[in-house]
Length: 253
Image 1 (spheres, helix red, strand yellow):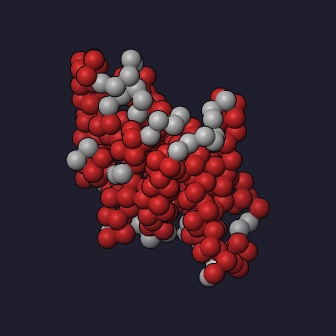
Image 2 (cartoon, one colour):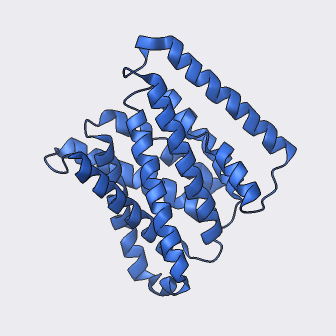
């Protein structure tokens, strides 16, 4: 659980860094994942070179699809921060335990006990309260349509759940470094395509923006998502997803 504590602390910096940036959401997401991928590559060539041999043909396709889901998660989450409050966005995007619990029960055969069910119910109430609060706050919320921002955050949560569930399945037999490299590379490629289709500028950013890109890669990327992927080999997916509910506390502190 110590590793998950580190991951939560690292991921909690994401919303603040995104708010500090003036770059488009898809550009932020692209450079975050691209730089995280580049940071992981040296580990492959030092100690994990032969671990790709455990990949089956189907694993490549599944991991790539997971990367695409992660891309949608990032794009939706980052964009939501332009339309709603940090507290609402982060809380709603961390509603993923709802989706993970359903997927874990029906896909992974993980049992969801009464206590966990009660915890998920509390999360639903919290999500509803957060959205209602933003609707009533009106002008106090950044953006012209907080409900749209909240909807984007929930979409991000659903995509994050797919990412966690597939990661839990594949990580039982696939090593961490090759797995995250495939997922991150597919995610970066998807985000690049989206950025190009949107005409988002990929260059011309100053040192401050590049420091934010790097901060997103090192903190939420390397020490956040990569550590979460490590934990998925050892801890049930529902436990991992529920532990990430600690992110809103750090993001709004």
